[in-house]
Image (cartoon, rainbow, N blue to C red; front, side):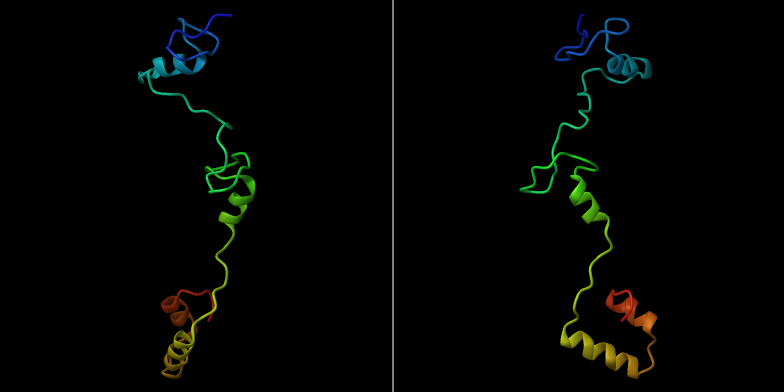
Length: 105
């Protein structure tokens, strides 16, 4: 088995002295010197997490957490007073939700 002719590439030679990845780049006119992607090698990008990479730089657990809808946040007493005052003035629930950034106030 002979290696690819690109320096630092240890993949098996396929065509014209290049591995499949570098030959594909050559055919598309892309530079061969750029590093190839390494799939499944890196771990989760969250600090302190040592789980393997699953999607978009995150492990399976953190990827699922990132896709969950935002959690409910308790409103401060000032926000509640402002909401009640606006509602008493005739502002609807949809407008209150838009102004205060909540699903349904």
